[in-house]
Image (cartoon, rainbow, N blue to C red; front, top):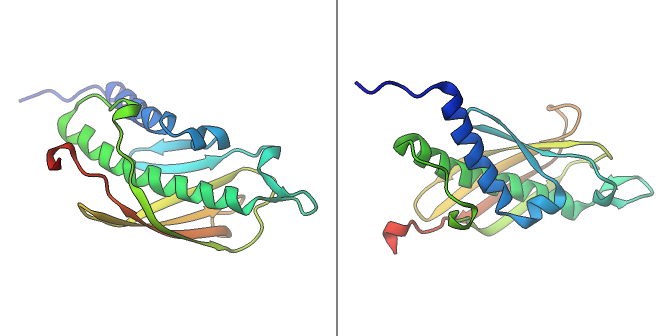
Length: 166
């Protein structure tokens, strides 16, 4: 019987995979989006920065930044679920950023529920359905109180072909 790997080795492999995923997306870097990983659950974090403000009179986070943040959370969650499965089943190394195949957005609908305040924002995405060709994801964003969402979104994505399909 094969002995289980030490927990730290497993955590390091998972963290390296998430880092590779996030570093491969320039817009994620531009906005400064970070991800807090607890097991297979991800929470996207958008740290406050003055460049995110769209209306300085309110002040409020720009709607495009909010939509981009939600779409990033959805795509990273969806891609992470694919990478997670591969890492857990094979026990292999995380893919390099250039090897990661991202889903393509078919449509993305955002509901702006209230203004995003000048503070950190959080989002959590849930894959509703994921098949070989298509996936549906729901995302919720909040700031100080998880129960008071400031935006939510639903997206549909075309899944990347696996190398075996090509």
